[in-house]
Image 1 (tube, rainbow, N blue to C red):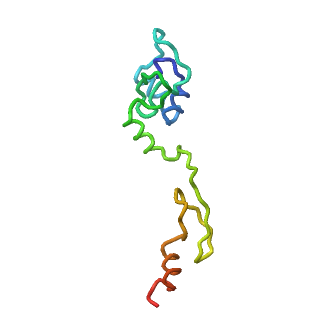
Image 2 (tube, rainbow, N blue to C red; image 1 turned 30 degrees about the vertical axis):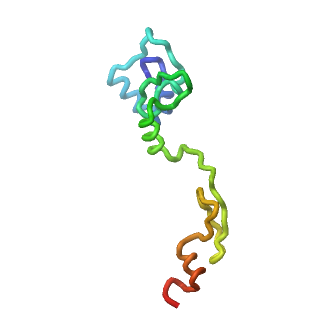
Image 3 (cartoon, helix red, strand yellow; image 1 turned 180 degrees about the horizontal axis):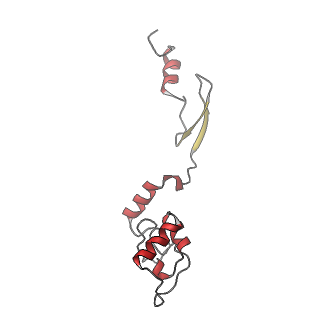
Length: 125
């Protein structure tokens, strides 16, 4: 990326590492911008987010292949926008809780389900 003229800061945010780490690595490896290559200001859509390989695609893409896409999302689960949170109130203890991806959940825990179903405090009647 540095050979194509991308700044250290853009490389660091694109890869997700420290700016000084990128600077140090580029200087030690002797990587300088190449004037014969077309200069790119923004690396998004030009290089793979996972491996940094150039993306040769006519459509906008973040990853060069399926394996890179899977490995990047596995390493960055917080980057996904989770919208399927549902709020409920447990009928046994009355405590409010949130369930992700399950509209039909009733109890906040298995212990509350057992108490409500069998009328016990966890042991035998």
